[in-house]
View (cartoon, rainbow, N blue to C red):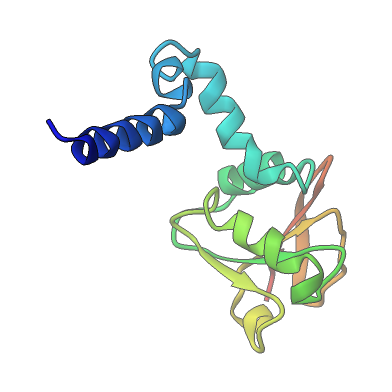
Length: 139
């Protein structure tokens, strides 16, 4: 073999050794139940209680219903987007509406208010939890 070929093989071997991660083997021996639980709650770490609240809302609203999401702050760029985006997964099977959009409240059958308790005409409170309230349209 010539020296250039040996040098190329050595460079490729050094790159492969440097790119190796022990996690590639550890993943086969990790506690999957703990990992699954950690990865499930990870997206909700910035909003304590949100996941639990949304699961409660999911259990109290029928599939196919229209649920508007309310939060203590309603500015899209100041955190409402995060709360709204996180609500899409637990409320799958329902139409999730952003109250920042025109006409969303008019279309909503329910309003899920996380860390808020709004008084909205035409809606009545049907459930109150530790992290928020669920309102249902009465008219």
